[in-house]
Image 1 (cartoon, rainbow, N blue to C red):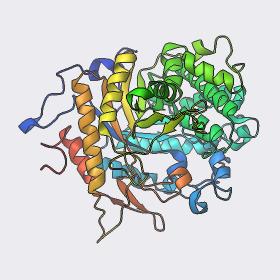
Image 2: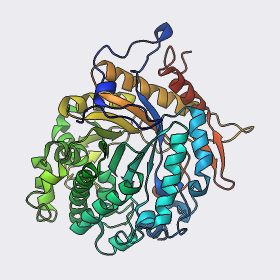
Image 3: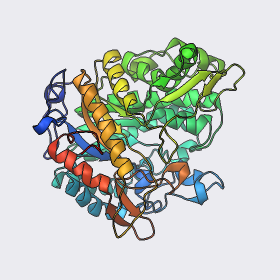
Image 4: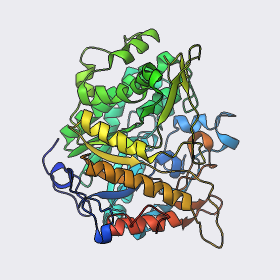
Length: 486
């Protein structure tokens, strides 16, 4: 971890010295309210393809999601991200919205094909101009920019050359990362390399339900390794260029099952969690994951020296948490296409309340995950980079009442607070998402935003959850009891 660094104007501190929390430092606020540590970072998150639109404007190249969404049957009702939330043209309105909610941080992704239309070669200055304007606007409103360099929108030209199954793409990613830093690095302290490489590799190249839509276990393992290699190369290059803080964001989840399911639990935990945590933070792959990968195409894509490149010093580990995975042993069960090597493992449906995605609502899973990470990987600080829920929101009399989302967020923040009190080094929380948006293969049918978007008119309406979140940020803590007990 780096020593304390100086923040740019408007940036909240998230360094080890200023934000590390130990047991007892989450004092109760007035009246016994759970209070978060001083310097705790409150914000929201989005992703470029899900909100920007302007898919073919100002020199932007084609991405794998532009192509995938045009394949019949791949995205619900043929929806695309061509317009999305039109954030490319409405970013100033959205920044004012953020400021009105009191956000201290905004996590967005940079669209690789907007910056380098074919993935390599000349930089598109118009693309960087957009992010230049966005960063300046954020800082002018006291909001720290937290860019993510890859949130799944690979330039199609690179996919045509093999995509993430090609080792060369990792090097092209590092080149692109430096190009973005060259333009924005004087105003940004914290840089995230990748978002959820498990999703990009195993849903994009394994099960095929995400772009680019391939269905090959061997390709999934190769893509996963090259994504990690790209992370390491980019992190090293960013550090050399002067980046103060570097993060990697993973989708992580506790894997839960009955007592006789220990082998199933270990297998899924290895594929989902340890396959990415251990190379990035320990410089090695888990043996059980290597054994599975070897059975699905071999290990020739892992070269000598790769793991030293992948293991780079990180200040922050971004955690995207939505729900645990529930598994049990089921001899004869075929492998889940997204989890090669899970023959004999059943992925069980959730019991209890769920979101509109049919995902279980389990805030205790966040607490246990944070405590596990702080125990097993104590060298890195933690930041919740995504947490949120889709519900079937409707506008009534110009308002959007979403008490289920308020309850969801309240419960997960209480779990985060409990983890901090027990010693987890959690430094901030970024809700997913600021805006209703293009929800990948679900198109526009699932609404995760704390701000409602009427996609026909692009009107933004802060939901009751947004107003509740503003109050949480203002008091740096929660109300007396759980939501609904007031």
